[in-house]
Length: 353
Ligand SMILES: *Cc1c(COP(=O)(O)O)cnc(C)c1O
Image 1: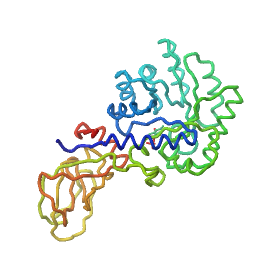
Image 2: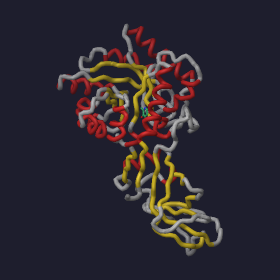
Image 3: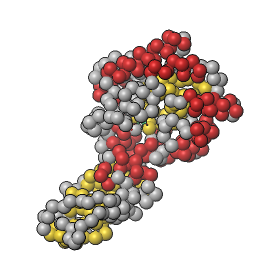
Image 4: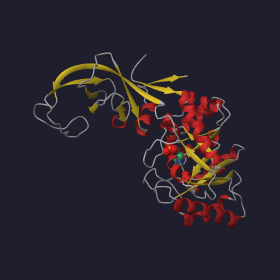
């Protein structure tokens, strides 16, 4: 087997997804699986489809295109607001897109009419996290125009918190979303099919026993893949937290000084790192680096300390460890390490069935 590689335990992954789905359904909330952290992996989508999941969301249209063109029967949602330059592909490959700009929605409408389709949208609301979102005070006017568009179906509203600004989806924020949804329904005498309240950060709110109001949908990625909610990254619902394992191979093992010697200047990434002098220590170099993934987001399963990394090398303090050249070392990954490892062509993906 080659290294570095990402081992994916599909059985644990599907179990996590089923537990999260049951938890949501019990509260009356439908679930879309967000596959962007696994780069729209076909193996993962197929495993989930085979186990009763039918709605998937992605932020990259190329991943949706691949899933659509494989002929799988699934609802596909584009999470990131469409670029004007990709409107054609969005209408072709996504059933639903999340939107905040009228200029984009007008173009989606045109493209849908041109190709004889209806494109469904959710309007995203800005509630404090300051990523994408329509200001609540602007919503009514935007809805008014959308309702005149024949190529667009306004499926509902959504919001995304705890992503850029780290603002929690508190009971108050969620009540605000519901109030806005109900007001729009009343004002335009319509029924919003979907009120999409958020992501893995909504776990505590779901648990709190608060009335969920109009919210009937969540878009969940990290909680399924890594087994944690995302406000404090606590493991929840007895989910597996080891669905993914990064494996890297040892290419050098030597006893060296622990403090670099010579005239000190910047390192490869423009930093001037500081080192404690611990005398001579055994050091292991693994063939994996910043080009492959976010090294700050991995944790060795061995009791070992990562000293640092360059583009292609990870340096481990190997004190007290029985390691040699050719050995493999396993790591846990956080969200950003997983995201980048999945996207790297240098990291093999090995699916365990
Ligand atoms: C990434 C993303 C999600 C999923 O977030 P998780 O923390 O992985 O559950 C949901 N909604 C939007 C709009 C996203 O961009």
